[in-house]
Length: 253
Image 1 (tube, rainbow, N blue to C red):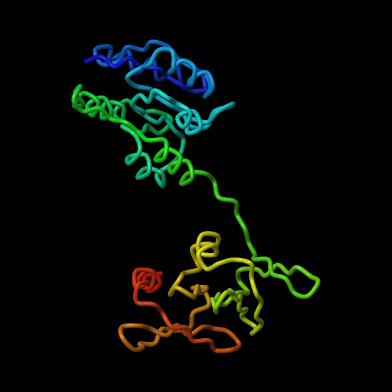
Image 2 (image 1 turned 30 degrees about the vertical axis):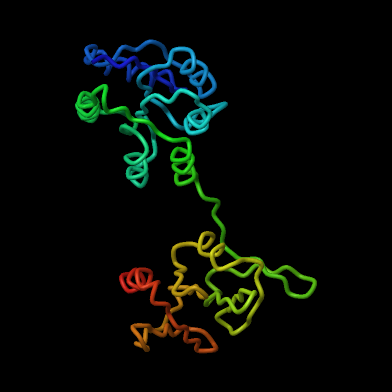
């Protein structure tokens, strides 16, 4: 089976190299056209309705993900990307395959063998929801170094290395510092879990601790632990049973 194929990449050298590599598989690929950005790719896919696209991600006008999210006709996708190994699992779950730049001949051979196993009865479709989810996973995160809190008429920025823990009480979430100060935040525990770096670990429904400021773990009742902190108050915070995976990660750090 020949796959009617469109190549979409804003780098002419990358397109040229890919075309040269694909010439060895003219029994598998019928390259019908190419596009140099996401907007052009969107238009050509809607016109030609290819079986398959090789798609770069970082492109002008529309990124690869943004382009895919707007498609009405969804071809099979092979990502061609400079993202490194941390993204591999995400690509495997959301596309036929991925190729890391610069594309190696041996790696392309594996992609070709994978494609040849696909028959007409094995249509592979990707939902817009899964593509947008992948986009969110791979988007560079804005790096932050502190949490802002109100103190009277001032807004203070508390550096992460000065924070001992966060604890929720009723409708408030409190930030507790190493030197024993406490501030009300404007975040929920769930918001903080998403916003904070990996050194902060949620240990219960109501608490997140700075793992770099932990003194010791003490066994408690019903399989729970008390997490003793290196802070002025000698805080001890109870873990939640449903957060044992986080606790295990804590013990392995």
